[in-house]
Image (cartoon, helix red, strand yellow):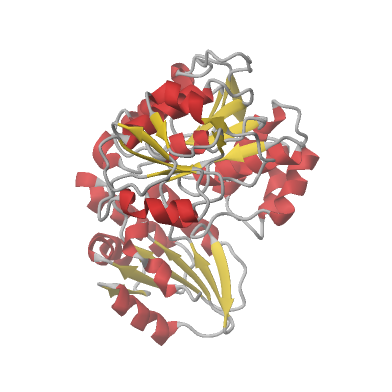
Length: 447
């Protein structure tokens, strides 16, 4: 459960049962506060959900979760492994009950829900939006980490304290129809799209297809039938590759921000150290455009940036033995890869700039084309060395880079990349490491 707002009274088990058709047995208390399906993340008073996993069944950890203080465990109706006296909530399928309860609970909340999506930058924009609203004195609950899918969004909703002023809900997708599913759960009042790039294009075929999927958020704002009305609006950067298409999909007023706005220079100065790059200025402008609708001032937003940090693996700066490492390995797509490279190339350093670039996933039949585009840009930028890691990067990315420069090497796997770094890195150097998370290049960055 998030600790970003004051605790609320929690959700009544009687309401949960009414929403899902559940039956309670044992000493189930009146309420629970927060939910989790990870027994390692149980907090006192939460509801532990016993989900079947890819490698093990969550029912095996019911006793452990209850021992750690869970208020009760959500289990299958036919589960026979219970111990006497355990507080249990039985449903036909815990995974099916989760979104049903989440949608019902969302409609009881008085706070406004802000949906955030995009091909790249959505987590940064979500974090900035939440930070700016908090700077305005509001109580804010936001998606934690990458809980932005069919499990993460309902968990985010059910963990939201009832006294929150805002819920900032990140929504991810890699297949058509997923944003609509998440929107139908969260029923956002306002919507934010950070960018339209080529992430997951394997499943959407074109950028227009990606824009239409993300634009589902804009097309479905303000549908909540709860008791508290909130203004419906969308926020979009004028520089967005599919600005006109997205505006056309939106049924609510559109707040437009742009790099030419007078606030851009202020955000650039404030983000120069912690979160550099033109793309992050755009993310900050979008977040400001949203927060401003609720009375938050530029000065309050700038103050919030003084201690702003992102979750791990997103431009994480590590200094070890005179070398400055930038770990940006949480994820990668062509848009975010080129933005990171351009930002990295513009950073001041007394030493050399070395870029370690790995494969990008879910690009389908255009994978070679997109890797080549990244390789070509890497070859154009003022970098002193480039290490390409993985099959696609060693082939398409390196081949395109070779047309621009010979300052690169190929590393087919993690071990080869580590060896190449050991041979090349010296004190004073600046090193960028970026790839899709599955490449595990974050292991190259010192702890």
